[in-house]
Image 1 (tube, rainbow, N blue to C red):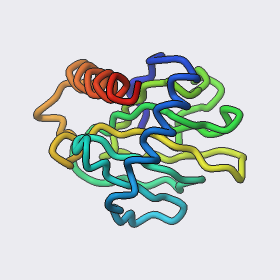
Image 2 (image 1 turned 30 degrees about the vertical axis):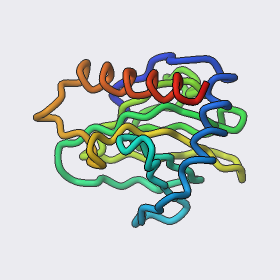
Image 3 (image 1 turned 180 degrees about the horizontal axis):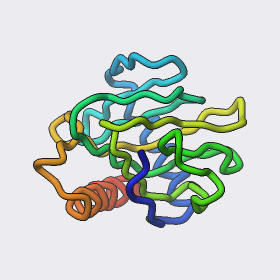
Image 4 (image 1 turned 30 degrees about the horizontal axis):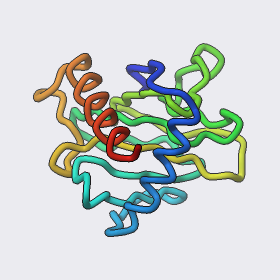
Length: 156
């Protein structure tokens, strides 16, 4: 379920971060139990994971976890990352540069109408999805923003 959406950076920055993440990411692959979803850890930035996919059906990952991420690519803004009962029309466009936090213990999905792949950069401290008992919503947003700022400086 979508619990936070704000503007992080411009599309040009997101595109350059995607290019940098793709050059660094294929160092190890993380298995995903969902069709149309792949992720790669970035060894030089162990708290970041590049995730790419197409439509991902509604599911929940269990537990009380946040998944903060920055949208790097969303072809023609056709994909939405949200809970299945959240209305797409009520959401502002999730364009490249958007910072999004999902409550992945509740149902969520990547839905859209495109054959192209979306890409996001996830913040997973110590290669773990942040637990809600360790981070309030505002704290996870700020920690993710700081990690993305650091990666942006590295990618420059």
